Length: 242
Length: 242
Image 1 (tube, each protein chain N blue to C red):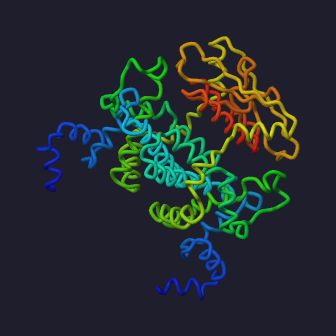
Image 2 (cartoon, each protein chain N blue to C red):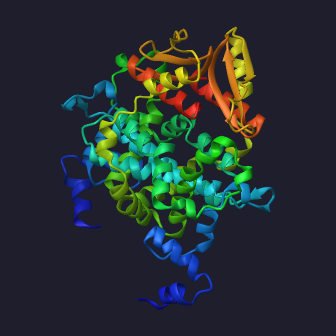
Image 3 (tube, each protein chain N blue to C red):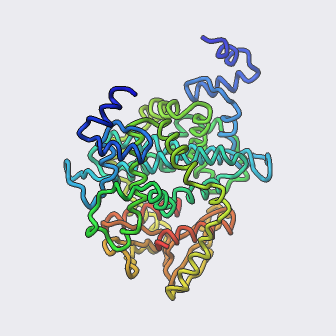
């Protein structure tokens, strides 16, 4: 065991924090400030300079991108004969807020997050807090290490043990029925409407709008009408936090 | 010069193609099949297996993700005190279809793309063909090399010489005025409407819908009303291909 590792785990004033991170991540972290920031929700952040806060939102932006490309490569290689529509859909399933929330919960991220309960809205409490923090954590891993490390970390410590990709593939997230069910439960009307193409527009594209109580809340576009509908339903679910 | 490089550039039956790629990319490519695929539009692709085509769309999916994370990191490090809203907006500007189309044109990608003119819709011709191919090319570079190579390729050969980030920062893409101007030119009404929050929803979130001729074509959500409006206008521009 190298000296720096021994120091960090047994003698550093931060040894308790370092050990809890090691339990979570499976390695001894380098730059602790990054991880502290990753677990700090905007509700407890303070201003550091010119209105910039030390919350996890910047790291979330970075982590979201890194996660997206690691998952893209995984799917690209895993499904050599599937088209980009399938790959995009699979990626949405894997990085969906509900999936990331579950993942974060299973990893025990909730014990690490610093946030102010009162400052969170009703929805946010159970909403995206966990998933957002998970992405911020990926951002911190990337900044602390590098792309390959983060890729291996995601594949070996997160995705392989916790994400059943084949089950996700089979359990089609039927956003349309999810949406319709939700609307019934909340006493709302929902219609899928075809929007005619503009003059000069590509006539092969279908545009479907989802109207909930007469209000369009999402649109989907695709060369295939069914897919446009699916896309619109998925976006509507995201918009309505269903 | 290593033997394999000499062989590729001077003796390989593909030497002409390899040299044209070297001119474009600045390095001697490894796996030519990847680059051939990256430059093949769906209009000239053929089926390879179970309906899967050898077009560039899968590589575009991958390249889009890699590009997104390289640009995310660049902006994250370049603007240490800007919030994630700013970073997201800057990334959208850099990877916008119009910016990628311009980039691709400047790199001379149009000379490499294989496509069937007749099979493209009116809009598509000047539309996303170049930008999409650019992303597919990034996917090919990644598959041929690795992340760090692709990152350096993008930063040093593409972004530094061809993308003026500071100018992009200053020239605010005013999507709202762009949208209003377009609607005036096309004799359409446009209204920005606040959608009231659902019961139990986070009350600090603003939801703005852009209605064009009474039809909602995009929505934006943000804690800041102005930002929600901007976001909605941006999405509407994307939706209407403005």
